[in-house]
Length: 131
Image (tube, rainbow, N blue to C red; front, side):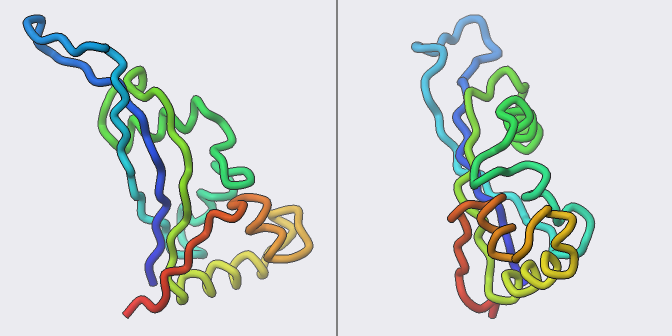
């Protein structure tokens, strides 16, 4: 069972040496960052509910703080971060839907489809079998 969140992060390049300058100082460097998605029902699996809304990061500042932590850089170097997709295999997707269905009240929703749309928008890519 495999799942990962994919983000696009734009960060500011900096040099720790005075003799080296980067022009322009905010040249856009974009990194595609993948973060493992915890298995449904385990600690951290509700990351999508707590962080995303309609396929976007709900709080930009928090998103930049997360990206800085993941990339081990200072938060002031992160210009922007955006959620791209949740990539999952078939087994992960089925387990995710089962866990959501088991507690729809926690999502203030009536169906699993509503939950997926509410938090992930159309940003789910099922990549097939995990074999």
